[in-house]
Image (cartoon, rainbow, N blue to C red; front, side):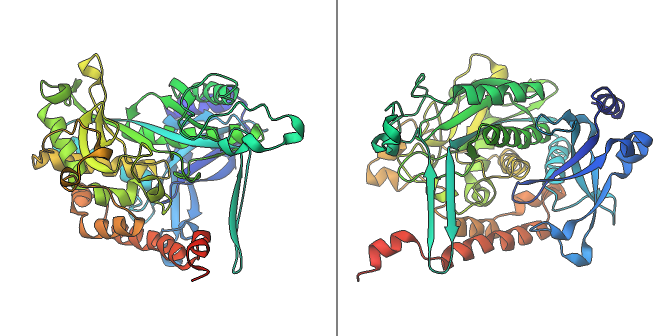
Length: 472
């Protein structure tokens, strides 16, 4: 969408406001809202100059001594917000450093743009396609608190397996999924059909093409909405818009949606499997006549991801909760191997009928990942694999959860904690710095920023520790 078309949208929708959105390091959107008349007064100048704001108030960004930042709106992202009372056009922005007029080196969207530019400059390809599958839970309610003398959380979900014994004034219907029993049953066990359909209707209205929606494996209303792939930055934009829609539709239904990887103990967590391919001159470079229809380029790309997987974990699995999902036997891809159809491997090659659809699927990321950073980092790891011809070895077509001990010891694994992942990123990040995509300053600031998460968790007593140690 051009500036002309974005202005046309503002005028034809009779928008009162324009909402400027950007994403912080953690992956959370922020916004500033301006009256539409300011934009319409001189659209070309406004889209060029954007909106000034204080970057020092954003976690993980530079301090007050370098706080002035500029939001530069991307007209191609404009849409009418489906939730506000007053008609408001939303536009996603890049964060610009006024010192040099370039994308701020800690702005996730600018990093993603630089990754796309680096792909083209490398000569390997001209387009990277990404297709994430963020899973999520929808609960009836959630309570949590942490204090010096008390810490607790409680999830309320009438569709949780634990609700079968609740009285509910004699109205307990008994139709709910068991633990690991939530995958695609019909109603009344699947109680989220209308909710998901409402989400899909809005997503498609925003131009985000939906391919499927269904309930997922976990009890307590785990869900997935599958959407069509797109280019790296566009697909990251759409992932942010998708999370916004899902959380707000759930809110309007009187429920709460979460992309937390492991909110329920003892059941499957939520992943964000990321489908990827590289194209050049309209040709899919991942299609070939090798294993599962892959080219050598695709195999080298897989090799790069596997080689750098532990460092990638710091970005693709950026929460302490991420590693409560990455444990065996909960469909969590802990083993760093690749395979066709085998969902216990970290890299899966989906079965497809067309060479145009040939792709690889990284299964270890989760939806707490900032999509701009995660997609950019995965691309940079894959490109390193191609540039250095890093072969991933033989595929793993066995169930990797049930290998004999001598075979199991030979298969590397993802990180077991955020602390381990940050240490891996500290030791292995040169591949991210190429082409100025990520900066050394960003690496250092990100590690310091996420180490605070580790510190907070390390200092907090856990309720299970009382169970295990209180009476010793």
